[in-house]
Image (cartoon, rainbow, N blue to C red; front, side, top):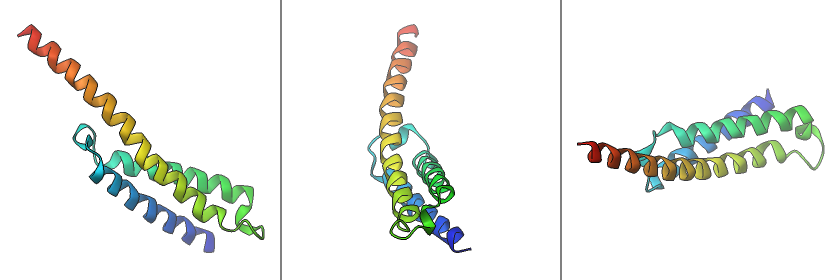
Amino acid sequence: METVWSLVIVILVVAAAGFIAWATDHHHDAYGIMLPVGAAVASACLTWIILVFAGTGYIAGLTWMPWVLPMAVGIAAAVCVPVLVGRRRTKRDVVALTEILRRS
């Protein structure tokens, strides 16, 4: 049961980081609010599952890994995924809008 609570805390931290990443991104109008949150939570959960199945939560000296590493991976995903998607989406929207305006 102790490991389940570590997952809950990791999810809460990375979800908050995802919301903060969305709020601070200049291109957040190009994608939905759940993109950074979803990317952060999915990557953190996958990392946590891999680390727990590897047994790092029960090895002396490595008990920090299922806590800190998923949070770091989730925060990195919350920052990187929206930056990439926001820039690409904005460029594609400009190209599509230009094409529509040329046809008119």
